Image 1 (cartoon, rainbow, N blue to C red):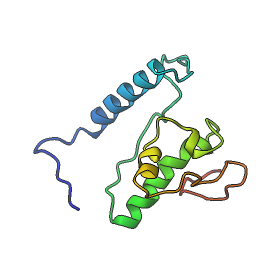
Image 2: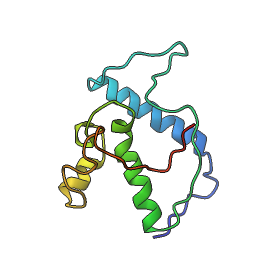
Image 3: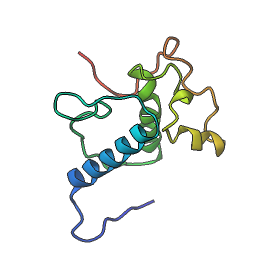
Image 4: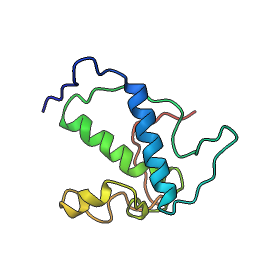
Amino acid sequence: MVITLPEGDSDFSGRWRRIKSLFTRGAVKGGFQAAPNARGEYDLWQRRFWEHTIRDEVDLTRHVDYIHFNPAKHGLVSRVSDWRYSSFHRYVRLGWLPKDWGGTIVDSEKGFGERTG
């Protein structure tokens, strides 16, 4: 699959700022318990992003797995399936992942490419 951007559309920072803003507002309006930090931002997102072009299906799968597991990894939920805002639920409905994918945070030893220390 090849995705092309509209001509002249390379403002990744602006696009992500908008996505993060709309998602966060929707999550808070929908009941997600969060309070703004000292900068008036919600600590739901990291401040920066790294642009990355998905290379192939394996790379896409790794990135989607990382995204699905992140709420559990960061202690927002104990199981991936508990994060109601996730596309994980769509993957389960489509039969692409089992409901118990990722286990629980206490028994998971999966690493999704994030370096620590």
